Amino acid sequence: MKAVQVTGYGDINKLEVVEINIPEPGENEVLIQVKACGINNTEIWMREGAYGTGSKSGWRPEGVQFPRIPGSDITGTVVKTGKQVASSMIGKDVVLFPFTSSGEEGYEHISDDMSFIGSEYDGGYAEYVVWPAHLCFDMPLQSFTESAVFSVSGLTAWHMVEQIQVQPNETVLVTGANGGVGSLNVQIAANVFGAKVIAVVGDLTLEEKLKELGATHVVSYKSKDLAHEIQQINGGPIDSVLDVVGDALFSTSLQVLKNGGKFCTSGSAGGQKTELDFRTLYLKHITLYGSVLGTKAEFARMLDAISQGKIKPVIDRTFPLHEAREAQTYFKKAGKLGKIVLIP
Image 1 (spheres, rainbow, N blue to C red):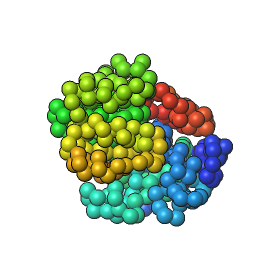
Image 2: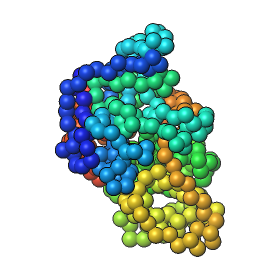
Image 3: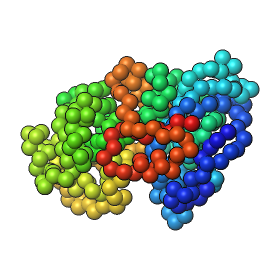
């Protein structure tokens, strides 16, 4: 089969198209013919070493073992089953829950042994992939490409919204609202949980599209006084922030939060380190949440909301598998709306 491997830490030249053997499923696994694989920050930061210290990166302390096939947002068709898996799974179109874990139900995402497909396991930048049968869910939509945009970013967004317990008619500020996680934060908070969403983007030409996704207001981070603008359009402080930007909007986020407000972050595309005046935190009774991925139960609830049409796929562009370098380069450009998807 054709696959794209990361051969080590570095730039996109570390992505190589190779011909390797099709993997064999283990006893409790299935072999999936990959039909689509969404791109995430996760595999780019894994390649760049951004999740680790020094030369290490990945979800485990020992770092990624190279060469590694990246890719975690995967849809495809089961074409072979392991000995302990019912052969009736053959032919099923599936979307993959993106990690393994020995954590108890409801705590899978914070288990020390959480291992990620595309980081600790070979992933979806390939024509075939193996994965545990019990972590393969029915596709929520008929399209492989459309169903491949939710696994990591969707689960992350869904968990963020559940974590801060968004209530109907609350105001939620969503940063990086044009990205994979951000655009789903907008949809989930507004269309599933009934919140009023203020979306923050760089390019206001995206305003109408974000309003179509569920945003009530759209503002630009380039505003001369963003904090004042946010509070003015909301008629006062906001209830919570769903953030994927990090440093660039951190102080503004805390400034516009109400007393007792909540700040939840799952990314730091705008800076991984920041300054915090603790007085702001305790005088305003602000709660901070760190968030990544979520539970299998949340994944199932998200897929159900997608199948009901409450959350819609937002795709910016697709690339053929062999253009993975070009796809990751394009992914890092500003001003996109939605996901980038590789098609084997």
